[in-house]
Image (cartoon, rainbow over all chains, first blue to last red; front, side):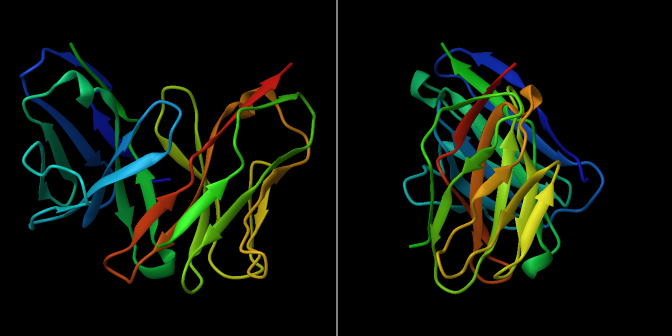
Length: 117
Length: 114
């Protein structure tokens, strides 16, 4: 299957600093990428939908100024957690979509464990 | 709005036991349905899917049938292995083309003991 690479897999940062997470589709072009947050023992919460060349669409309750998303090319989207605080510690997962309609399929990165200390 | 409900975990079974993880959904129309698996420390992987009523998705010995009448997509496997230990997510795809999103259930943690 298609490969989506997410980097870094783990990051520890100090409170108040910013962290950038990259999501790359390695063998296909993804016009749409998604960013999720997963709390311990809970499901994935969609944070935003990222379309190449346009502004991301954020879900209700997600601060767009805190979670900056850039989809600069058809194979790369980045999530920057700005001025991180301990409550931002979580598992962040990106997904890239290939195809459209009922043939669409989403491929997931391996996730990034963010710990803010 | 659209939603997915899974049986609560954790589920613990012995190797070679029969597995069922229940999943029901609420949606307008007939969404595509998916099961994803998340192994420890990894992202989600598509396990199987079904795009229309009565379709059966299958992979790695797992099966799930799209039941429109009961709005269900239960995951089954006849004989589980230790390597099946993971978190399983049921999901549906909602929205119109170009604006489709996956809606996930809460996940079910499965542990298989040797």
